[in-house]
Length: 565
Image (cartoon, rainbow, N blue to C red; front, side, top):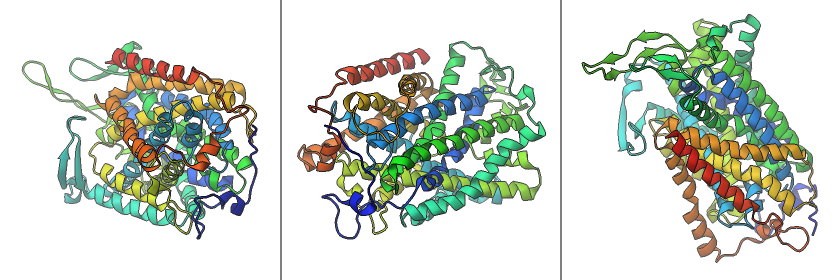
């Protein structure tokens, strides 16, 4: 049976059994440019982990970003194709991928959607935390009382040494920023798109200038990039050039693993298919042009950052006891400075690229704060719609599919907010990012494989955009590359990162069991059943291949994680 995908007007598209009076559904009000501006917050994600990658990987850090955004751009073509199959759905690639997997396993489908949300939603807490840190750094001295007070609520040392939940000034300011973004988002996707366009212009200008100015001025010393040796330490903790042995490749894998959380993020442009005026043409344009923007920013900004700072020089040697054990690690400046790893010093470092005056420094910091707000806007839009569609499809709790009169999924937005108020209290944002990225790799694996599953099971469905077969093949190959990088490199961000991430991903199973088997008595909503229709006699044609892909991925993660330990 061939499914005909039609371009419909808002009224026709919104008709379903679940729609009630008051336009209680998402509204078709934006074109691809609106999604582009909503997704324009993705380039700001470079601020989240650029410092940590540089301080961990060393001189090859710039290469990590170039390789990673290259991977992300190739993968985007698969996502653009599968999004076109379901123009009536919102929530992004995980939703379209869930339809591919659900005939093979009801439990893999909600895992796809859940992992997408778990990966994306920490942008709210990390972004607001970094923005709050930038504000505090710009306005107060490091030893000021407002920067040093905190109330510790819970010790999470069993996950990572020194990890706690605490309330401090960063939490207070960050919470206020989250509420501000919620107020804007509550007005619906059209108001969000307009706001992000304004923020995007203000926020992307400094990032683009930061990337271009060093190329124009020639401020790119070759010794800041070469020799291309991974970071290593001698017996007393002093930095040396490492070797491309197992330890060196594990570092590189860890860098590529964490960079993927930022560089692959422009796939969020297909989250808004259900709100496009013309989804058949807007879907591909949105993700393609968002991808081009990200290629530029994720290539140029890390190059400029590294060219300006360099690896760093020792400013205080390591302190050892009588037995030769290091009691205090050596202190470096440059990319190895402590505030660069945490991300709090990245704004100040980037402002130095454009000038050393106080006015320029403060202006750049303000614009980078706007960039972080833009990334929060992007994430709140995408993550809430992922929860909304997962609920509408019968895979996540029912209350998450409620919307307000503006077509904004308010229940899903509040679920995001409450969850991130807790995450905002975490003392180590990089551990949070890395653990969440385990889910992101799982999401990417499932949905890159969904590309060929849909082709086998729905060969005759109309595809407004059909990716070249070679790109579907490359995307599938990269799905396995990504899980390899996760197995090798996840735990360089903390010994419990991989396991914590897997546990976070697995939390969806009791949630799905409750919704599907208890609330819905094992019956999927009518709309989801219609989406599951196949060609011909309704039998799947991919056979055992999806199961084989899952088994191979599990084996890869098991062996690579043990190899790296």
